[in-house]
Length: 414
Image 1: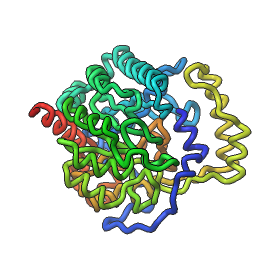
Image 2: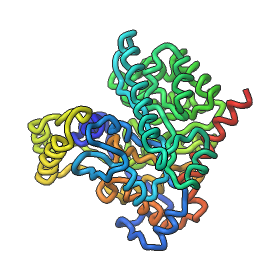
Image 3: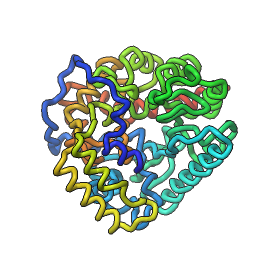
Image 4: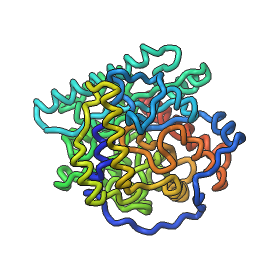
């Protein structure tokens, strides 16, 4: 949630570059498409997954349950079971996220314990709702769980700082269900360079420990995720990994020249190597707040700690925030911009190299694309753009499940 509020405040824009023009061979819809009954039925017939769900940030909140219906404007959450059903989301990768801290023994110990606690919270959510959710460890698991009428939950790790200098911990998390991991987040760590560290490069890609991290991920069959990583890391991951890699929540520089985004050459290289780029819903436009909005948010303050605040306290803060948003609207992209981003990547990578990772509950969301109930709009827009049903199902899940299976197959060959 700290990341969500940061994005709302616009501080991430300090790292932004200048927006650049783009060209797409297929034209994006000018308005959010109307989701007809036919399109909704088609959407619901597909296996729908998202590769980056930060929803575990809510699992420890007082009074919050994934089986209850929530509203983003009242409690900041974008994913729950009722909305999964409404939006057709069958499952995805639930994230163990740890914000970057000190590269010290004390820092590593804190990060390890924090990440293990988050892993336990995910498993506790699954154990508390066995009739609705089940952990997925393989691509076949996801399909089986879906056919059984339940939601599947893969586990991923955003930022491998919690491993410290002990790579045996990667296997510890693997045994807890980890099947995708990214080496780094907003700042450089002991393994790798970030795309957004204001201090610049530390390792010129992977450190020696990071090279061993790649090999260990390959050995275990964990998919390597290069979102947030530097361009050097993308290149070195492609060179070092024995299995296809993924960018679980990224966008194209051709739409917005932000360090978090990927240039066309690297998008194509990832796809040509069997990997995929999962389209994000942030870092697609300059979100620098106006001075008035910034001042209003600073006056409002950070808000309650979601891990301890009551639902009433959260709603009271959310209502105050909504008043600020109305008085000083946020500079946001919209669904049309999201589709321009997706269609651009499709034109570069092809339909087998694209997936969806909108960063729900981690800062994602745009005008007309506020939570997972809006997912059918993507199916409608892709149909309008001329993509086949087979292509669309691949974008929604087939490409990702193929990559998961490929990583595990490569591990089995060793």
